Image 1: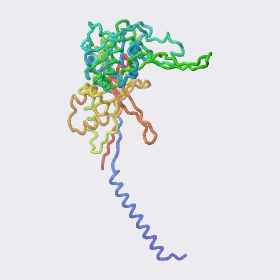
Image 2 (image 1 turned 60 degrees about the vertical axis):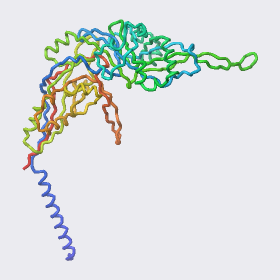
Image 3 (image 1 turned 180 degrees about the horizontal axis):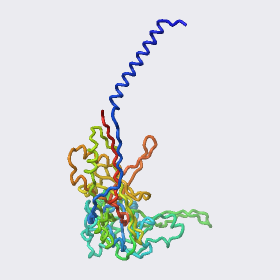
Image 4 (image 1 turned 60 degrees about the horizontal axis):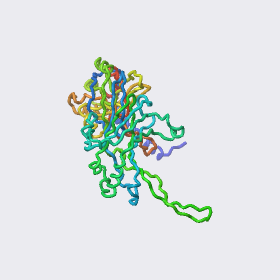
Length: 475
């Protein structure tokens, strides 16, 4: 078969182009990948220097309010009461034509979610409600003295009292199933109801903003006046006014068949005030730690308790980690991951006091500012961890940026850089759906954990630090 000169020339041109391309690719690839890449994963139990500190004064502002007393030999003696402003309704909700004689009563309803308690739900208790005469500061803490905000000697300061239990055994089956709350109803003076109605009708501007309302009515103090053995979590308080409303009712006379119109009075109620996140609510907490916990702390054990009590300060081994990083002797070293896992266990007790669900690890120098400014963990100077019941530990992921900042600074880490506090917290998490359908959780609020008493033993002697980095040795 005869091959044409044109075809031979075309084949030669294509071959030369292919060889040229191969030569170029080989040269570039050689310049990028020559050398050895090493990935180092360091994950071994590490002793971390730790010290348990008594946490006396802390931010106790919370939507959850604690009320009651318990005395647990392994835990200690805890007494809880609270101070709270109230959020006003901007409108009265009662027609101006309703006479004052139809204003029957006023009542405070304290709601405790079913099962939200520590101790014996059958323990008889009594609470008292006092009217404040001084506004609550925005930076109020747990050890505030309630007597600074109300006058116990003033008879008008005591608005009401109520004996109660947090058991739902007295409810019918249907009421027990349908109602998720146990409600404590406290009767307030009728005169207080009349004063509120008059103010709404003559000066409604007072109720348009919580700040202006607080100037006239600073709030309430609720204390446990009797009983021991139970602490309840109060989710909300509401103040209702109960009145009568005249309504026209049409009835048919059976004898004459005529329609007869009569006026009847029906019971009505309206919620005027309530606790809310927008106003100041602060727990007044007094915890006397048990000898059991004090002995554990004196033995060098790492302990955290709630509400308040003990927190643990640690010396994070950032210097040792940076030394390992620098020993690589490579300009192409990349930090891939840094996380910390702290084993934890319960402290035996007969009251069912468990462990904190979340821990915050925050620089000790910044911990007060963190709560005062309502910050959330930023994975740079503050980190959060949830308790893993399977691993029996708290895991703090995402500490890579913290380490990179120390490395990039070029300075020796200071004491302030490595000293952290471990504090039980309550996290509000919002799940956000992404464009691809995946769900990503975001922390939108972080506060001191005040939901219930807890005590946790941290095994900081066997902390696991996971440090992963890669290096490339160039030829």
